[in-house]
Length: 210
Ligand SMILES: C[S@@+](CC[C@H](N)C(=O)[O-])C[C@H]1O[C@@H](n2cnc3c(N)ncnc32)[C@H](O)[C@@H]1O
Image (tube, rainbow, N blue to C red):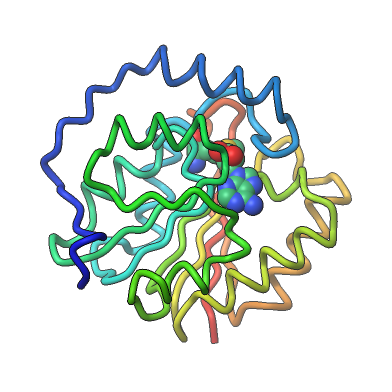
């Protein structure tokens, strides 16, 4: 694995949770449809996401829309020491937070749409799992399609794509459309129970590639 992606499981995280949440909220006010939530995900949702991704047995992990690092911290804790995590986040201010919080993590300030090229640039094969924080329900159909195509391409066969949806939005047409799309693109899609201890409560979709 290339040294640029070496990550440390024992680095100092220094939560500064209030500061992260304020930065996150400010970015939500600036770009609501890109951020898609008023607060970072809870540790309960992070635990569910990482467990469904089976990060503990992964070699190459991509994180989409890492935000202020709610899932990142759990991924770093769960993954094997030899595994490589690449976090892709296109908001420069949130990338600054991530760099301060995880100084040794491979963070790429770019759109997930370029995930395939990013893997190539890092000298990495297709990912074993992709953990996504992207706000799919805020995206128009064209953007959903482009980002989902990049997701499927960046995942190895039998790889897992794990994402979440807010429980209150499940019946919205945009959320139903997203579900139909992942059902069409992946061999298998499972839905978790509702994670109530998240603001707002959420469910995890776990999608396995053919
Ligand atoms: C709902 S937030 C989730 C942040 C974090 N994963 C969490 O759960 O707290 C969505 C994140 O996706 C990022 N994002 C949105 N579209 C993106 C894209 N095309 N490429 C990379 N990041 C994107 C936003 O900047 C934001 O940080």
